[in-house]
Image (cartoon, rainbow, N blue to C red; front, top):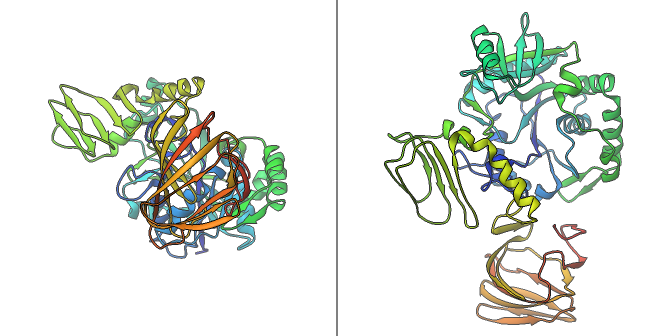
Length: 470
């Protein structure tokens, strides 16, 4: 069997899982089902298949350092991490992956997997992938249809033809239609998992969407390597039409095949889905964290920051984080995205960031804020360096509470140890580094007329960040 190249698509935002999932820390980077993140589970899921190459990842540029760190945590070295400057859906992502794999193996079998799925029966998944690989080697574009166990209205369906042929892709049905599909027995949920030869995909995308191939080819060939990442050309990729693999190719090609997959699959598309796959107690509750439940049934309760107690509740979702609490009826948990929309309209930041905000050098967390001041706790990883920068509107006072700091302030460079501090005047170039072997923890007190994160002018940055994060 040819080598299978796992391609993990990690571009989603997961707005329906707010407040755990945020724009800059989406659901695939969370441990929602076990001790590993959904992204890590996706990568490790193929380990039992013979002849599997290192993974290739397609991810949002804003998530690149988090993705790279999570891959490193599980001992994997990716072939490449391709950065999408903007989201353009799965057809362009698959095309970028195929172009990248052409450098390694012109007939590479690429297994396209979303990074945010749960699959309980990994052995069954691997058996089905081997079956799909045989079809893909023959030039088929293989998708995997989930064997339905309920009349689900939240998924598209695939109608099976003779053998492995796809007879039809159908849109999300209403309840009556979904019940008819379930009874018919030849309809499968559309999983969004695909297996195909990279060269065959490029032939088919050129046949059906040559505009996508042209834009992706120009963006990839015009890209450049940046440390552990490959940046496609932003301007050229911006001209690429947005389309899914299904619409762009699978519904039009004569080479579409489907293999049934019955492996405990879920896309965790809403809080109700996490309750369905979770381990329930005698009352049907799924809980994480410090939770006390009394006279409560069939609930999902997650406590991240403090004790959450419930009394006399049924069929609810309660998600507690340091900066937000969600309470919803379980059957309306899909509507959480309406809250995210309201946060955007109000120009609030809770849909983007957690209270702890992750950066390539470490993280920072808000401690207190008021008129003309705010206090943050910074954690700088061993060996990490913040950019050389200045602020036009604020001054900063740094107090070391753990570890050792190397500080650049104007023309000075000096070391601070625990319980020592320094002052960075407004308009002075400065940099913070951790030269030690343990995390550096700093209390930073900012004062000034404007304290936004966009008041940063960078002069040097080892992470090649040209603009401050919004």
